[in-house]
Amino acid sequence: MLWLAILYPGVVLLILSCAIKETPKPIIYDGPLTQGEDVEMLYTEKDLIKVKMKAKKVNDLQNGDREFPEGIYLEFFDETGKLTSTLIANQAYYFKQEDKWRGRGKVEVKNIEKNQQLNTEELFWKPETKKIFTEKFVTIRTESEILYGTGLDATENLSTYTITNPEGEMDVKE
Picture 1: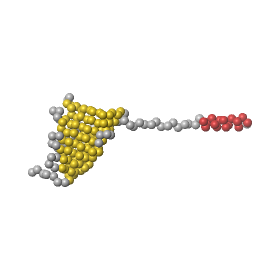
Picture 2: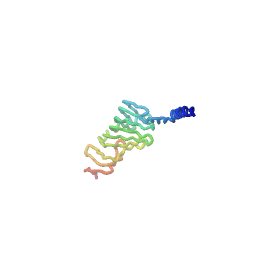
Picture 3: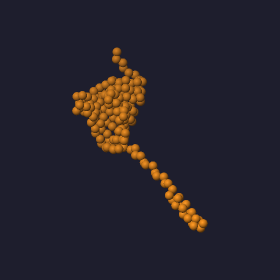
Picture 4: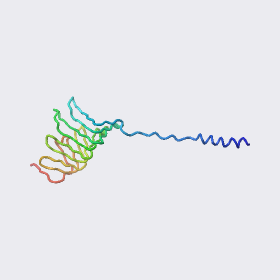
């Protein structure tokens, strides 16, 4: 019996020291796969530059999306290579699955030929349809008037547009 009294505490200590230790859960990294600084990219169709993009910083994410946390500048060109419009945004994000861009902050689109300027706080662009749109408040300045409203559907170069809920005074041509 004495040997049991001496052996028992040792067995208990041995069992307790072999208790299952919980392994820490792995840390899942969800940050950017790559980062670029002072980036300039060209989008071409049939060997013609259609869009030129400049950004101070680009984050390529794991799902294929891209983030432009320090802003973006885009130039759009027609089929002859002539600059038709520009877009500037304080922040931008590209949704790969939807092939859609979002500009946020101070967003400005200029139609060079028509001397028009669009300002809003958020704007979406679909390259496939060459359309821009928003549900936010917009201001469009032309040579002769300033238009206000909430919501916009337009071509990427502002050659045609519809303000969903217009406000203010406008000239109507008869």
